[in-house]
Length: 302
Image (cartoon, rainbow, N blue to C red; front, side):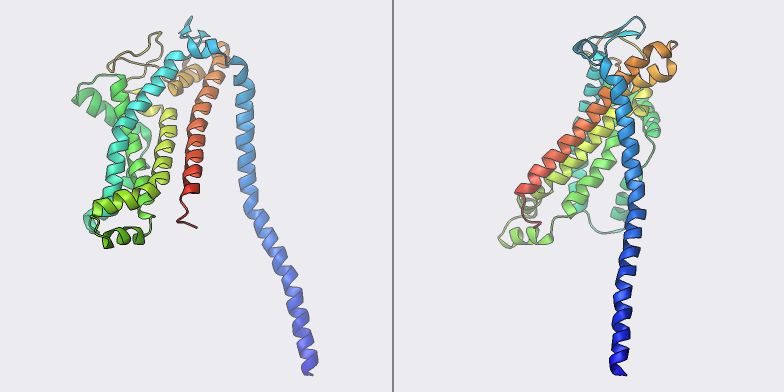
């Protein structure tokens, strides 16, 4: 009897294994389908954009100003304006964001006020960018009397980036094990020396990735600059911080929705969209490569 019972149990277990494997495979397929559908959609979108935008790209398109009511010419003022406001936003947001993130991770006391500040920073990261645009009008354009200018737009974009940089910097610093600090403190280092020599070098890849992703977001933002300095059409490059400027995302928006000859300017709109996509993917690729190279030299996670 005992032999028969053991035989039945063995057959029962042997039959359960294929059923569990079948259920596991069904679950894998069920979870993977949305991912592959999303990737296929993105690849189709990129292919459509490249197919329509690549014939427009040329050195003349990138190095000349638009003319004939933006129905001819290039997008040089848009490229220069986008690069300039992105640079201003980084000069403003990176030092403030990195220092704030380090303070929250290493020095801020764990009390109710700190929790409220940390929660507010994360909430601000999700505020729609159009709200930052309206705040930029009130603060930089009107209160500080900067007018509609490249400086006001750059500072407004800096505000958009700031919560994101603070949050990513704090997470990167917090992820470093406490033993790194304790070892330096045990050898007589001050707290700042322990942070500067034993924490920040290892947190640098995470901080840099957050900054570069913020740059990629800045390049594609339209709403914050819509009310603070971007202009519909100009042949002049911004030579002073008080000048108005053109930008790639707003130029694309104007050609696609506001122009009175939309069919005629559509090829230029595709070319502008492709250049904007190249900028965004370029910053993402730089972030990935730098993070990969630095992580190979940091063997503490192994």
